[in-house]
Length: 411
Image (cartoon, rainbow, N blue to C red; front, side, top):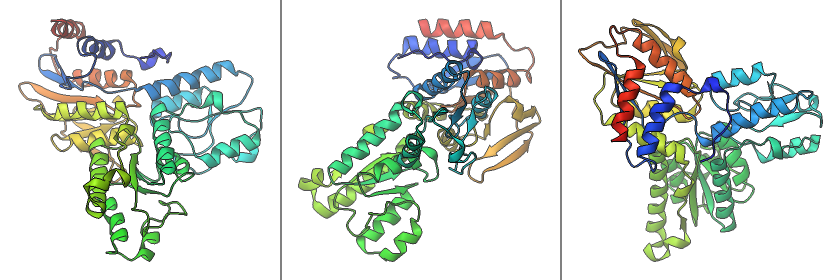
């Protein structure tokens, strides 16, 4: 896989070497069990796969290179490059300005831009409408498009579904930048609708079956369907694509649900003409992160720490999984850990910060699960580990633990 040039302060000499040791012995990622780092009084269970993915590193490399190559031009980002506050702060410190916020609300008016400006498209991609707007202004976007190739793969699948006269069902959060972009591209070619979960998928199907009144569809799915979406005729042929950071298991569940509807309606012999299998649109990094999280969940631990931006969809899904098994704390960086008695953490369901006392369990051998989202630098995870280690006495050195790990995975 390509090696990207990203700022060195995002790298971690310790975490990166743990990852490299696993990669050498398990290049195809057949083993999703965690690395267990034994520091004596505390053990860290480190996920097999976490941190920057291909799309994120590609976006960061292009962004920093763009600033260096255009010292005399204004450089803008359509919105946050990725959902990580550390990275976005670094970009703004470089002079990059955001045109919109994450909800698509305008910060800088279009009329303030000129054809001399540079505008970066973030890793989530952007809508067809915004692409046209930039071209009308005369802004060249091809060289500054950091859209993740796996997002573009979803767009290509949506186009393929449209060419086969199928309805596109998008599993995603309709206000998320990626889903807004995917929906915009999808509706160019096919009737399209967004469902956030299996519950919404089942509700959608009830309009097709006549269990719900069609008139109510437009209220329930307002802002989530294309203008040409007719719930009475939309289920002759369907395919499911997804926001690449959603839970893979949930996307599969939704696809299987609609496949069963097609089977019941048209029969086994006709299923290929009415349901198109699109499971290959799942992002490999999202899949690997989630499989590694299931690997963590098979272990015993006292608590879990997940590091990442609070508006990061893929990170919130890791939290959602881990909190099924452990007291789980979702933090953006080490500064959220006040001390061993108090931690500030994010509740992704209510979108609120919480403060928890007496959170750090100290037993004969404290076991802490540690992972991060796809937009979180390894260095941030390293800082969290260092802070946690400072709360335990007589811990082994990181060099000693690293050597032990390298010996373990070289055998």
